[in-house]
Amino acid sequence: ISLLFNLIIMSQEIRQLAPAEIWSHFADLNAVPRASKKEERVIQFIKDFGQKLGLETFEDEIRNVIIRKPATSGMENRKTIVLQSHLDMVHQKNNDTVFDFDTEGIKMVVDGDWVRAMGTTLGADNGIGVATIMAILASKDIAHPAIDALFTIDEETGMTGALGLKDGVLKGEILLNLDTENDNEIDIGCAGGIDVTANGTYSEVTCPAGVKGYRLTVRGLNGGHSGMDIHKGLGNANKIMNRILFSLSESTGLHIGEINGGSLRNAIPRESVAVVAVSAGDEVKWMSGFDQLKKDITFEFETTEPGLQIVAEECPAPSKVLSVADGKKLLRMIYAAHNGVYRMSADIKDLVETSNNVAKVTVGNGSIQVACLTRSSVESSKMDLADALKSVFELGGCQVSFGGSYPGWTPNVDSPILKVLVNIYERQHGHKPEVVACHAGLECGILGRNYPGMDMISFGPTILGAHSPDERVSISSVQKYWKYVLEILKEIPVK
Image (tube, rainbow, N blue to C red; front, side, top):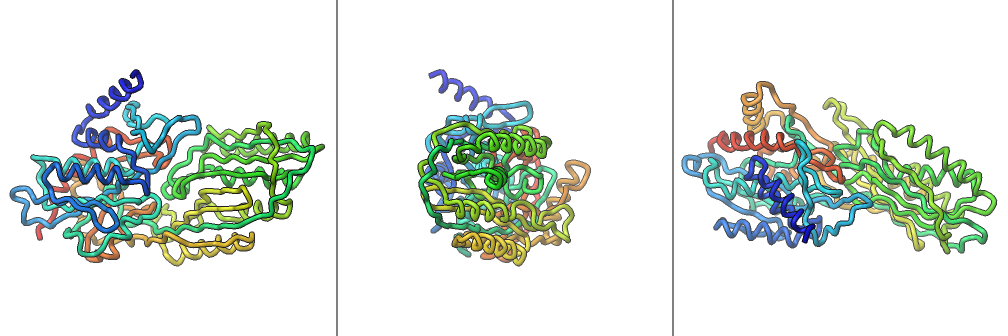
């Protein structure tokens, strides 16, 4: 009862923030579990919302939800707009947080100028965008043109909602994507992506006698968005773990039982756990080497990853391990797999053009899987890096598959809606916004394939730490953004 009371109090605190129109809908949305590929409840939630308002509401073939609202009085001659956000959110939590994403709503708290969650991702990406659209659809006094509200599914793990949207479903001529995370930026381009997955097998052998078992843990990393944060020099738990195992296996008798690191392809991995056995007689040398590696790595990352912990704990030795040959092949393969920035854009200052995230490593029971997400704003560069990864994994004896490929969004600096947004921003704030392209995957590039004539733009409030339990959204930024949205709706061009 006490926990339920506290949750009610926290929800009320969020609902009392300004603008209440957004925060109340965000609180309602965050009470609904909405993991990618598990969106049944949030789909029904948003359909019920539209139907209760008496608005035309329907699903398309892929289960995106579309809600139509007519123009308000005096705005009938303006172009129809598409307001677009995605329904799903990334589910990540701290290792010591007890939370069931399948059954529980997000527990939100106010922390100064920030709203954050208690040990989990917040879902501001892209829940603030969804809540904004809900506020406009429910409004009685906001001036706006005719609206197609598009709520896509599965943006975070494959963009399948956007990929499956057919031409002819939308009537709008202008698309406002509400999925950017810096309130002084207007986004006019983004990276495409492709999943690179390596699957292999290894020979399980009986663990030698007289060994000592250890559980190695890398934890406490920041994690973050594998596109927006890839250039920040953050630690990747999979690469750090592999470095430790490689170094210790070169100098001591180390036998690998299992490795489990990372979770989602679009999140920089924060944690990795390995169970190993150390040969009899090598324990002192092994622990000395481990201590030195721990010291070196924490020193290297002390600025960007002050919370990094590298721990070795005694545990029962694994009964089965990789053969020495297979262990060496595995560690060399992961060591050689590129992680991080591959190429910076030559045309747009400070923009990452191409990158890779070694997102998930799973080794055990005779099987190996390494999952990566490769991104680029240049299609040929994306496939160049994907092929480089494929070559490394194939040399390691794995079968490699490509999947979930989606295109980037080519910037249009002459976009008419861009000029509208720039003028409004400058009028409201006395200076021009930054017009940028981002290294994240936005749905605009995909939607543009079936709607090539649609004028598209992306913007949003300031959200930090997306895809990690440190995710937070600025309260003052949401206020700034809401005023911007209301003015944009008034100044949509005539047909």
